[in-house]
Picture (cartoon, rainbow, N blue to C red):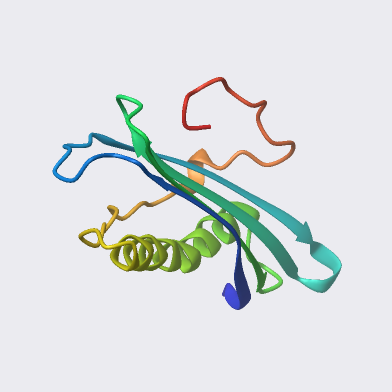
Amino acid sequence: MVDLKWYKISNIDFENDVPNGTQLKLKNSVKYNVNYMDAERRCVSKLEFRIGDENLQPFSIKLEMEAMFTYDEFDEKPYIHTASFDHLFPFIRQSVNSLTTMAGMPGLLIPLMKLEENEVALGKPKEETEEPLN
């Protein structure tokens, strides 16, 4: 069982320089890394979430969140990775919604996201890509 012990939003970047009524075509980007401390059965994760306009309009939100989890002795790392993401993602959704509402916009509710255990790559992170939202 994966238990969330604490989380914090370590960075927020928000840009909204589009005129009222502008139609945006939003695109999400997510990076999620987990560092394990097996002897203590705990891990620290970092979630980077970005949303921006696909046509590069001057609108973007970037949130970085860190968290600590504990896990059981027999939990496997792909399970820990996906379960910890499942714990954190609702906080990202709520943060984006609150941020856009406080900025005087309609509250933006991003779609649910799920990670699949069979897609979790253990080991070193992948190299950076040159996509506009990365």
